[in-house]
Length: 278
Image (cartoon, rainbow, N blue to C red; front, top):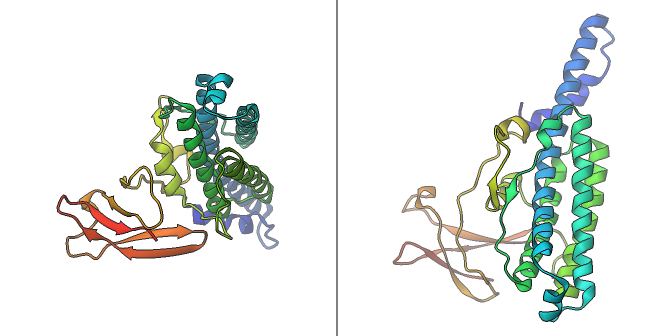
């Protein structure tokens, strides 16, 4: 069943006045099962993100002590703030696991193992900024896939907190200006699926993504870019050459909020491409 099909299921739950009671009941039961399955798959997807980010905070804070934060020049409130963020992701995960179990899919709530490139406090803080941006953009883009007013409201509540944390990290912790944008940049399900997959090392034996996650998830090919990108930089990017024909005109898209700016790529001798960042 495709995700888009779930949007029509509520109509099937309405009573049919001209049908025999047994037929109407059977159709409602079947539709209710499909409706629950749609919600369960969406919740499992959200849970996988919350567990990923919780694992990041939990493993990093276990590695880095309060003294490590002080040595890096951060006051004590910074680590305390991260401890609160970790607790929030644990609470979100617990909520989602409970709801998935209530929908009849407790076995779908298992968690994977992850690895993160964190060795220093600054490694952690820089990646925390990226993790929060991932969480916020994921929920901004994923809300359209919710098929329950209850879950849409719950995810809106989660999104609000995660956006606060993202702002706290970028301003109070990293001392940066507020982002110059009026709308969040939403991510598609496959976008987050691809990014998150880079941190997964293993999942429970027998896990079949098609059985528990939204249908149609695919890993995008990996795009290689510099670690640091600034406006005005001319950067080199590369990606698998199976994605295009040599005669194709290729563009790089830069998204800010709802706005997308596209710029042509210039081929390099080594097979990579160059583009100037707006």
